[in-house]
Length: 144
Picture 1 (cartoon, rainbow, N blue to C red):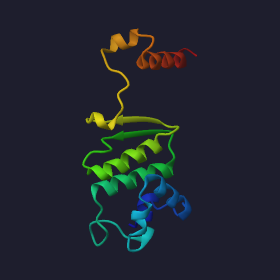
Picture 2 (cartoon, rainbow, N blue to C red):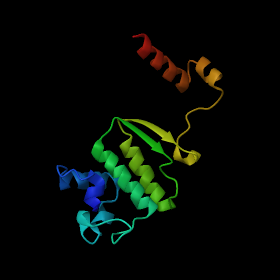
Picture 3 (tube, helix red, strand yellow):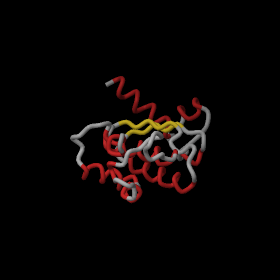
């Protein structure tokens, strides 16, 4: 399909304005503008534009912006990326996670910010730990 099809999953109701806003948020609007047919550029290995791993990852993040989910789960979102693309992905993820719940699965510590670490029982027993506050919040929800 086309770049547009890839972003919208063939939903013709998504306007170009909305698409360009998502691409601007991710930081890849200029790249998309350089495509031979813009949003109508055919992508794929058979006669279309072959994307790099980073380009594909950034388009996937643009799809998330368009879907506007309350929960975002990312599994190794910055793996297989060159440093410049990783910086773009990190910036996009930071914007994407604003006002959303995010679960990030990563092997590289540079991908996530570690707030605290230690044995589970020690963190749970410490009323000043983020983990204990999360547990307490969860229990309040269950007991309410």
